[in-house]
Amino acid sequence: MTRYGELAAFGTALCWTASALFFERASKRIGALAVNFYKVVVAFSLLTVAGAIMRGSPLPLDAPREAWLYLPLSGLIGFVVADYFLFNAYILIGSRLTVLFQPLSPLFAALFSFFLIGERMRPAVILAMFVVISGILVTVLARDLGGGASPIDRGTWRGWLKADALAKGQGKGLVFALLSVLFNAVGLVLSKKGLGGYNAIGGTQIRTATAIVGFLIQALLFRRSGELFREAPRDRAAMRTTALGAVFGPFAGVTLSLFALQSTSAGAASTLMGLTPVLIIPPSILILKQKVKPLEALGAAIAVGGAALFFLV
Image 1 (cartoon, one colour):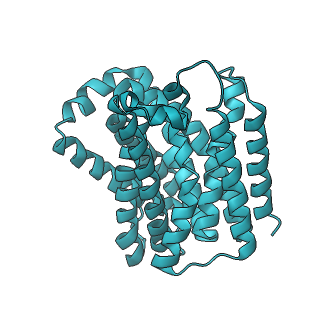
Image 2 (cartoon, one colour):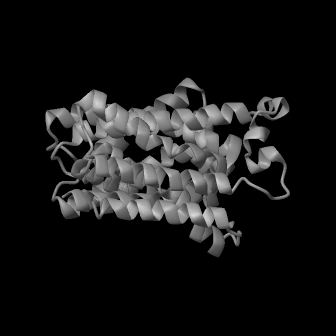
């Protein structure tokens, strides 16, 4: 089952690569809260249909007690809290800088899983994890070397530390990106704890249903219900983009991620899920017509080699 879990984690990274492209575009049009709310609504609807077809039960009424205890909490932390910081980071500093923090997720996940559920990883798996993380870091840092843009636009460390850049929300965006990774790691560990041997589709339904309620409460607390229910639906292009992102993100991607967590360690799963900064390179070349630097390609090769180690050790 470990190999299937690792394949599912890699599939999750592919899904999240696609969803990141859709969600960034939609967030800049209708805002992070609207995208987050409608993506989980679409995902829950799709999961209900999938549950009826594949499990013979449209709703997770057969979930065990432990699932109802941990998965709702995971949904609130992983979807509502983590995605609040993630999507606002997209808006403040863009997905390019935001993904720079994603390699930290496996480290947090492995740490939390050790302290919260006593999970340990084999030395060979830890080695593979660090090879992947190294490759991802080289990839995302290589994108910010050279070029004619301003330091803050390129996302260089020197640019981030400029006082005028921080005054324009860059500092806040960086903190949000870090918090999104931290809370996402907590959500992953709680998902693993709550899912146990239960079906991944049903488990994802519980998480998305909780997230729907969480985003509604968030809209009421921040007095943004008008933006959520009147303004956002008027932008049909953004709603279509959100729906497409939901198919790849909280529907297929999160379901695969829960199966991966069920079948392998949290650290290994989150490492392979974190390959998005590498996997996003081909669509950047083919769709966005961006050029790839040699160092960026080297980082991608290292990360892919590390990912291959998971299937060899």
